[in-house]
Image (cartoon, rainbow, N blue to C red; front, side, top):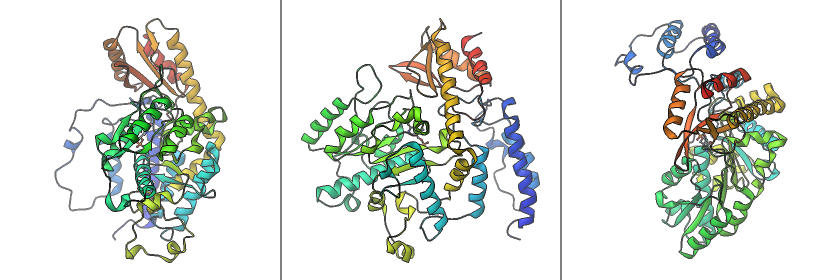
Length: 473
Ligand SMILES: *Cc1c(COP(=O)(O)O)cnc(C)c1O
């Protein structure tokens, strides 16, 4: 028998689901992060896999044993590091269906359901976020689920390179590659995935231009961008892509998308809005301003796998022109030729991403939308925003602590009034407690603690616990 029978799967599956349910039920009683000696997990494994099969019932106790003391528990309600990555149990049910089907949605015809559920839910989500209708499949653009925001940035850059070379009437980028003059515009707060995209696309470090902040802010200065674009163009360089960020990873700063796009467009640069973390908040009418000006952009990305209750990976990307990604990425060998594709009536998502094969990720999004409703998602976001406001208020009134940047949605950046060493010691103190996990950044060369509220199950009690650790009360 090469696999479990469906009946064996049913029996074991119940046990495995129980394991996950028990893990989640007890997670608050475990430390957020275990203290792990490098190599200690690997050393539990022998050098060779065993030739003989063993019963799958026996795997769970082994997993318990090996993982129990060597994990960083991303689903812990005390996890406030980086940006939390929600893997809701609701989305897990969708994952089971998706992996259970085992479909490969590279072409429409290899799984029409995979493609069309994705089109349907990305259209629904575009409208729920307040994106212009042009970004929907109905409106001539469309959404796609990438594995990560990094991939979204990369394919946006590839589409930008293609569009730019096509516009110049010279040889197409996809035939000749880059010329060395292409430039991408970011700020010092832009996520490192843009630098990586520039590297992967062959632009190298010199391809990246860092636009200064507007005075007194950490957001892209549109006037400085305009000066840079003019000067670069005069120098024979080619502005290819400008990336405003909505909710930077360091401090949650929001670049002025509308003004940046107005400046970038006349230069023929593609505008990619990176809202990987914060974009989800636009589900709430009171945060709708986050997508202001996105109608002037070419692409927009936000991660359902950060704040929208959806297990990694599910990065939502929308483009204003449905042809833009296929124009840059489509390569059709004979074995992928297909009547439905040739008809032009369908979307083949392989042309919207780097890999050929793709998972049926839309099922877990559908499960989340179905099981929580937009109201449930809004409530999830609002709870964290309220916790951040609460923590920021406590920091403001504490003599030994100060805010290092204005709080942004669920993110609070703080430091001690006694300098970097004291701030670092405080962070280590909180993290060593096992009750909360925080991360850090640097602002103007100074060490800063980041508290990112966004985990499942975080309650006011967890905020109180964190505050006791931070304030020494
Ligand atoms: C987290 C984050 C990213 C990277 O997200 P991945 O999906 O892990 O690639 C990019 N940009 C911003 C602003 C982020 O917060």
